[in-house]
View 1 (cartoon, rainbow, N blue to C red):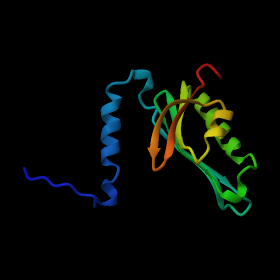
View 2 (cartoon, rainbow, N blue to C red):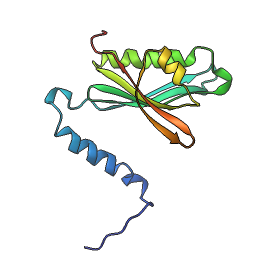
View 3 (cartoon, rainbow, N blue to C red):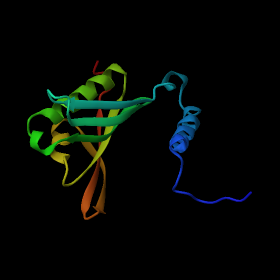
Length: 143
Protein backbone atom coordinates (compact mmCIF):
# COMPACT_ATOMS: atom_id res chain seq x y z
CA UNK A 1 0.00 0.00 0.00
CA UNK A 2 1.37 3.38 -0.99
CA UNK A 3 0.64 6.27 1.39
CA UNK A 4 1.26 10.00 1.47
CA UNK A 5 0.58 12.88 3.83
CA UNK A 6 -1.75 15.59 2.61
CA UNK A 7 -2.90 18.89 4.04
CA UNK A 8 -5.38 19.30 1.19
CA UNK A 9 -8.52 17.33 2.09
CA UNK A 10 -11.96 17.78 0.55
CA UNK A 11 -14.45 19.65 2.74
CA UNK A 12 -16.71 16.60 3.11
CA UNK A 13 -13.81 14.63 4.67
CA UNK A 14 -12.40 17.31 7.00
CA UNK A 15 -14.10 15.92 10.14
CA UNK A 16 -13.00 12.32 9.51
CA UNK A 17 -10.15 12.26 12.06
CA UNK A 18 -12.19 13.94 14.80
CA UNK A 19 -15.17 11.66 14.16
CA UNK A 20 -13.02 8.54 14.25
CA UNK A 21 -11.34 9.58 17.50
CA UNK A 22 -14.69 10.34 19.12
CA UNK A 23 -15.93 6.92 17.97
CA UNK A 24 -12.83 5.27 19.47
CA UNK A 25 -13.16 7.21 22.73
CA UNK A 26 -16.79 6.20 23.13
CA UNK A 27 -15.70 2.59 23.50
CA UNK A 28 -13.81 3.53 26.67
CA UNK A 29 -16.39 5.61 28.54
CA UNK A 30 -19.18 4.30 30.78
CA UNK A 31 -22.53 3.71 29.10
CA UNK A 32 -24.20 6.62 30.94
CA UNK A 33 -21.70 9.09 29.43
CA UNK A 34 -22.03 7.90 25.84
CA UNK A 35 -23.96 10.17 23.53
CA UNK A 36 -23.09 13.23 25.60
CA UNK A 37 -20.93 14.91 22.97
CA UNK A 38 -22.43 18.18 21.77
CA UNK A 39 -20.97 21.37 20.36
CA UNK A 40 -21.56 24.63 22.21
CA UNK A 41 -22.02 27.79 20.18
CA UNK A 42 -23.34 30.82 22.05
CA UNK A 43 -23.50 34.11 20.19
CA UNK A 44 -23.92 37.55 21.69
CA UNK A 45 -25.78 39.68 19.16
CA UNK A 46 -26.73 43.34 19.09
CA UNK A 47 -30.07 44.84 18.03
CA UNK A 48 -29.03 44.55 14.36
CA UNK A 49 -28.31 40.82 14.84
CA UNK A 50 -24.57 41.45 14.36
CA UNK A 51 -22.38 39.10 16.38
CA UNK A 52 -20.35 41.01 18.97
CA UNK A 53 -19.10 38.04 20.97
CA UNK A 54 -19.59 34.43 21.84
CA UNK A 55 -18.33 31.12 23.13
CA UNK A 56 -17.39 28.06 21.11
CA UNK A 57 -16.75 24.79 22.87
CA UNK A 58 -18.02 21.29 23.38
CA UNK A 59 -19.77 19.22 25.97
CA UNK A 60 -17.64 16.14 26.18
CA UNK A 61 -19.01 13.33 28.35
CA UNK A 62 -18.89 14.81 31.88
CA UNK A 63 -17.28 18.18 31.17
CA UNK A 64 -17.55 21.33 29.12
CA UNK A 65 -14.45 22.46 27.27
CA UNK A 66 -14.46 26.10 26.22
CA UNK A 67 -12.28 26.58 23.17
CA UNK A 68 -12.98 30.24 22.47
CA UNK A 69 -14.60 33.10 24.35
CA UNK A 70 -14.48 36.39 22.50
CA UNK A 71 -16.09 39.81 22.85
CA UNK A 72 -15.41 42.59 20.35
CA UNK A 73 -12.99 45.13 21.83
CA UNK A 74 -15.46 48.02 21.95
CA UNK A 75 -17.86 45.89 24.02
CA UNK A 76 -15.37 44.60 26.59
CA UNK A 77 -15.58 45.63 30.24
CA UNK A 78 -19.38 45.76 29.88
CA UNK A 79 -20.14 42.44 31.57
CA UNK A 80 -20.71 40.52 28.33
CA UNK A 81 -17.91 38.02 28.97
CA UNK A 82 -19.39 37.28 32.38
CA UNK A 83 -22.85 36.94 30.84
CA UNK A 84 -21.53 34.45 28.28
CA UNK A 85 -19.46 32.34 30.68
CA UNK A 86 -22.27 32.15 33.20
CA UNK A 87 -24.72 31.01 30.52
CA UNK A 88 -22.26 28.31 29.46
CA UNK A 89 -21.85 27.27 33.11
CA UNK A 90 -25.62 27.12 33.55
CA UNK A 91 -25.88 24.86 30.50
CA UNK A 92 -23.04 22.65 31.80
CA UNK A 93 -24.81 22.26 35.15
CA UNK A 94 -28.07 21.36 33.38
CA UNK A 95 -26.16 18.73 31.39
CA UNK A 96 -24.73 17.33 34.64
CA UNK A 97 -21.12 18.17 33.82
CA UNK A 98 -18.62 17.76 36.65
CA UNK A 99 -16.24 20.51 35.53
CA UNK A 100 -15.38 23.09 32.89
CA UNK A 101 -11.93 23.46 31.40
CA UNK A 102 -10.40 26.14 29.21
CA UNK A 103 -7.11 27.81 28.41
CA UNK A 104 -5.89 31.36 28.01
CA UNK A 105 -2.67 33.23 27.34
CA UNK A 106 -1.09 35.75 29.72
CA UNK A 107 -2.16 38.71 27.55
CA UNK A 108 -5.76 37.50 27.34
CA UNK A 109 -8.18 36.92 30.21
CA UNK A 110 -6.47 35.09 33.10
CA UNK A 111 -7.74 37.59 35.70
CA UNK A 112 -11.29 37.33 34.36
CA UNK A 113 -11.35 33.55 34.63
CA UNK A 114 -9.80 33.51 38.11
CA UNK A 115 -12.42 36.05 39.24
CA UNK A 116 -15.10 33.71 37.86
CA UNK A 117 -13.79 30.84 40.02
CA UNK A 118 -11.48 29.02 37.60
CA UNK A 119 -8.24 27.60 38.99
CA UNK A 120 -4.97 27.21 37.13
CA UNK A 121 -3.92 23.56 36.94
CA UNK A 122 -1.07 23.92 34.47
CA UNK A 123 1.10 26.36 32.57
CA UNK A 124 3.46 26.38 29.64
CA UNK A 125 6.10 29.08 29.65
CA UNK A 126 7.35 30.78 26.49
CA UNK A 127 4.28 30.07 24.38
CA UNK A 128 5.07 32.67 21.76
CA UNK A 129 6.81 34.73 24.44
CA UNK A 130 3.80 34.46 26.79
CA UNK A 131 2.54 32.05 29.41
CA UNK A 132 -0.21 29.61 28.40
CA UNK A 133 -2.57 28.84 31.31
CA UNK A 134 -4.87 25.83 31.65
CA UNK A 135 -7.83 26.35 33.98
CA UNK A 136 -10.62 24.27 35.47
CA UNK A 137 -13.75 24.99 37.47
CA UNK A 138 -15.51 22.21 39.37
CA UNK A 139 -19.30 22.48 39.04
CA UNK A 140 -20.42 19.01 40.14
CA UNK A 141 -23.49 19.08 42.37
CA UNK A 142 -24.30 22.75 41.70
CA UNK A 143 -27.76 22.09 40.26
